[in-house]
Amino acid sequence: MDQPFLLYSFPRAILHVDGDAFFASVEMSVNPALKGRPLVTGQERGIIACASYEAKALGIRRGVPLREARRLCPGLVVLPSDYETYSLYSRRMFDIMLRHTPMVEEYSIDEGFADITGLRRIARAPYEAIARRIQQDIRRELDLGVSIGLSLTKTLAKLASKARKPAGLLAVPGRDIHRFLQTLPLDKVWGFGPNTVQLLAKLGLATAFDFASRPEAWAARVLGKTGREIWNELRGVSAHPVLAAEKPAQASLSKGKTFPAPSADPDYIRAALLRNVESAFIKLRRIRLRARKMAVVLRERDYGQQGLETELPRATSATHEALPAVEAMFGRLYRPGVEYRATMIILTRIEPDRVEQPDLFEDRAAIEKFKAVSRAIDEAGTRFGKHAISLGSGLFLRQGPESERSRQPERKTRLLPGETARRRLPIPYLAIRV
Image (cartoon, rainbow, N blue to C red; front, side, top):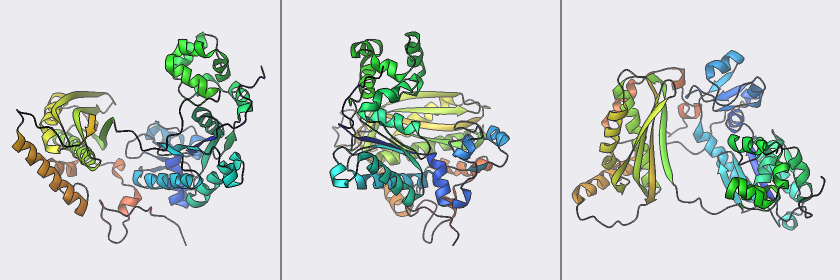
């Protein structure tokens, strides 16, 4: 069948901009001497967080243990993840996109969508040329490669960008959607998980075109609302517009820390968990929210994990108000002699920290004391850096296990004049020979 779904090439023009091996590419941009070498990040976790294309060519992928990666490539460059610098580059990448259109949606740290519909006259260029300018600007200003997909919907744009990695640009106009989908296996469709792919295969479907060629009512009957939305997106009818507005209210907030090496020391494990709690509540106060539910997770050496959840008597953003519940959950979860590799705190049932209605039976004096302590912590953090005032348990963190995974990103060890380990200028440290 060669009948197009749509006769209009671009009733809408949506871009998906996707960073190529983003973390590894940022490291190469910061230190050009690393270019062309097989490189991975994630040393602090013991598992690869991102692999450069040179490393991928050797069979090294995200999620592979470092010991296995080093077996595949003895000369592998292994770096700790520098999320601070990655975030700076991400912000610059989205700023470049915003120079070309105000309709930009940040989907993740290294990918986003842009609606450039109607900008051809202003830009004096076709849509594909606008996409190429964005790609070239990111390469010239950040020394980063990105792949770009251009089509009528977010789903089609994302599929197009994935089809031409790395540093590719693929435009799929409305007249050519059916041809593009004919080459696309079901497991490549954004929104189709393994179970959905197996179900559709049993129904005789093999490609995205097979799915989009079925009636809309059939897609809705088999896969419900999600199936109907994907069906429309694949046929060039937008079900998910680009959202340039502020991000919706946060549904949850989590803080976790993987240890440099597994530990069975209860004081160290408890201290690491409580540091996560401090960090989570500091952020909660900074964005003016409070939480009513908490979950604590302890992850063992073999990656098995146990967790407990509890509901607080009242929504709060005060660290010390939540500590008794955290201590109780830790006491129930911790098993003597078991080696743990990570702890995590998850805050849910989050709501705005507005003026509250006092409860008749609450200890108001204690609540006000907790708030006063939190204000003092935040004021000290603003002046002297995060965790300038912290729980006494933090002293045990200095006694933690050491390994090569304790290595810090270079940006945290090579400080500019006036910087401290907690307070740094929002600029990367470039390792460029001049």
